[in-house]
Image (cartoon, helix red, strand yellow):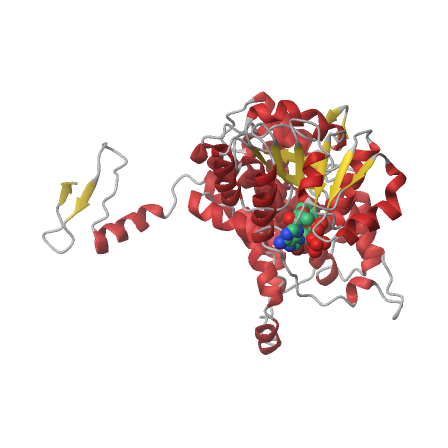
Length: 475
Ligand code: NBP
């Protein structure tokens, strides 16, 4: 046996990761349900490094050095369970199975517990960066038993993206923690894309800019605080011309966004944990609204109102949008990191948020300058109550707050939907509020359900006898 790592599941992600391992000098055993994919990989890229071709699971397992390390890159869900079952039957105690697919973290918790009973290590690893990242350096979020990271960490770190000499890979915590943080990463990605989309919408419909001109703005922004992969590719997408019509490609793409589910999972989990991830939720719902094609067709032409005045100072409004985007983005990330803290507390994972900011600086879809600021914020105060309170972000938001309000107000007057900008601003106003209307909510709940309330002036729970003499009793 001579392979340091095996990869099973050689579709686009698995092939590229196998090649990445090989290019870093590791001997890689290859396996795929249908041998054709294995042979295609060897035919096209066999000289990327040292590969071991295998057909059966037995051959595959026999090709691996002990403790055996196998990375599964198959479709999430039932196929993953099928492959795990087959592998587990052929492996020995101490061997390590890594699931690099987009598994739901609760599935990972279940799989880890069941394999632990059989003496196997199971590592649910979130992998971000798409095809390109898989080949040239993804961000890797491995969970699972700490001991397994000793045998696995150096291998994974060698193929991960590197930022300032630090690999974008670190042990996240036990069982499902790796897939959980990958899920939230994707949720944040949804929010980030939605906010960028709203900025684009405002340039197009409030300022009347064409795609090329908007691309120039994003390119300029990418040289500053907003520098990020998503802003960079936004400019590239906007600049792309359609070969058939000669117009910007973005103008011929149907405006109905699809989703594969990780954003929805993030919101479901946030609902269960009671964490307000409004930025992510609005982004998921905005995609759903865009995809409601029949309703949209029926509603087209509904009155917009006539209050709208387009901004007259384009330079000022551009700067306003930039600041609104930045502030909304801080809120979305703050909420995502809150969800990670809540998940970590719920499942006893002990996730270090600064670590995530560190490994998300490179390789993954949300990689950005911004993550350096987040890392600094959590390094300075690991218990920071909210990212928006870190001095750097607080300053950025407070100095841009008028811009943020102008953008939301202008969009509202013009009838341009900005669910991300608006809900983030409401979240900010809610969090900083002296008195929220929740006092009234508590009164109502006590009225119809005797749910009790607390008082501002004395401890304990109280109830008003609403259907009696309306005196107050201690509950
Ligand atoms: P797919 O998600 O399209 O899965 C295709 C692979 O699954 C093929 O190797 C196929 O084998 C194998 N497979 C299936 Br389907 N059912 C199987 C079964 N019952 N038993 C054994 N093998 C089975 O591949 P992908 O797009 O490369 O993604 C792989 C994983 O990585 C997924 O979990 C995905 O969510 C995740 N991911 C993808 C991206 C991305 O950008 N695409 C990014 C990050 C993570 P066959 O060749 O014999 O049909």
